[in-house]
Amino acid sequence: MNITIIGAGPGDPDLITVKGLKLLQEADVVLYADSLVSEELIERAKPESEIIKTAGMHLEEMVQVMVERASVGKKVVRVHTGDPAVYGAIMEQIALLNKRDVNVEIIPGVSSVFASAAALGAELTIPELTQTVILTRAEGRTPVPEREKLRDLAKHHCTVALFLSATLTKKIVKEFLAAGWSKETPVGVVYKATWPDQKVVRSTLENLDEDMRTYGIRKQAMILAGWALDKDIHQKDFKSKLYDKEFTHGFRKGVKQ
Image (cartoon, rainbow, N blue to C red; front, side):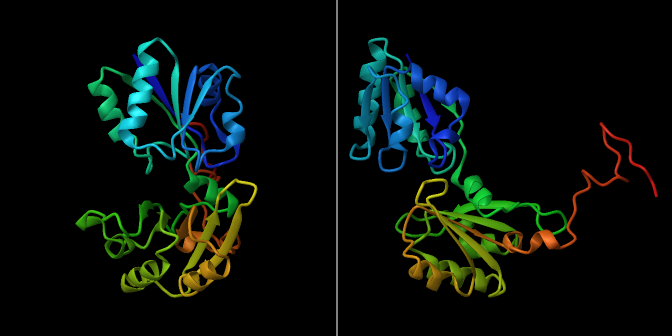
């Protein structure tokens, strides 16, 4: 037996991959996180497909439904928001499915972190400024491992992307400042990236909590922090070697001045 987990992308139904859409349109059974995945995307399934909303279901219920449908030869897909590999809670599903002799294929999707960077017009890895992006979240009701406390991660002073952290901005600011970040550090917040009601907020570490309250953003927000988010970064002289006319690589010989 086989089922497929598909990354739906961040919200815009056109941001699913070609392969993901093809498999969605071929499916006999579609399970999807209706609190996060676009209804417009799910409407692209074939009319006779069985559509199952999973926001109100627990893990064992979802797995049982998938196994029952797959066991009678139906093509089953499970549609996740963004990319399933990042905060997708797919491993617990796969573990139970594998115990039931169900194989799982994963189709990647566009993560909200990259959709948010696009909405901000940002490159997260600026040559000579930062070449690292940390994807993490602030610690709330769900703990993080001891070695992954936000203060310790922030000490790297690279670009940091915070998932699932919109209600924890006071803690975020406190931890970043304790790690030595400047109050003026640029922060970009994107609420519901690529959805029709998307909001883009440019702030600083000092003003982040107040700006989040002002715009009423308490969930479904990506927070991107670091100097790569400087709105004037394109006016500064940070350039990669890739397009430098003096730089030789496998497809072009550099020209010395």
